[in-house]
Length: 238
Image (cartoon, rainbow, N blue to C red; front, side, top):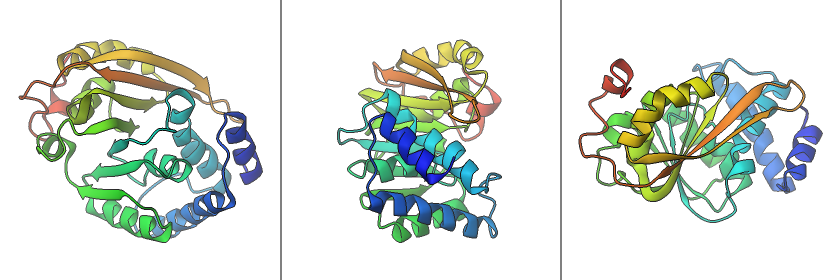
């Protein structure tokens, strides 16, 4: 996907980017590739692939959820900033908090935010399990996102404790989303969530299948969740 295709495809979805925003995506790409030589951020470095499989794929969440209103977004395990930084560039009014367990990635994201002049962003070096019991963050976010972090039964325990009652958890998934959702149903309900919507689409050009899962937080998460670091992955709620 070249820049013209990227711009046009988003425009068709009602997202019009300014020259400043397009310059930010370019700078993002350059910074990603530069830092990727020092720390492992992504296996995808070809420019057309980064624009399609990272930038466009991240922004796709906004095709199915209203990002035009101001809200506080938390991105769990964002790695090199996906999906939240591409979304933040497209919708600069969003307040953003990213939590990631690897300090090197937090260093990259801090540098990136400064390079792109992003405002209202916060980066926290922590495990999602300990972050989720911290009263400063627990049930404080309108929207929580995660992309390619863990399967739904595990991911729900990392993300739903952070969502305000009435807010949403948005999971960006590739293949096997349907099976993951079935296996994760008990976890979603136990943690106070309910499936609100599920959208499957294909990425343009390469036709890869993607699924956006939108979970509404209907009631408070029981105090015992999330459990200790590592436990959700070893013994998911199933």
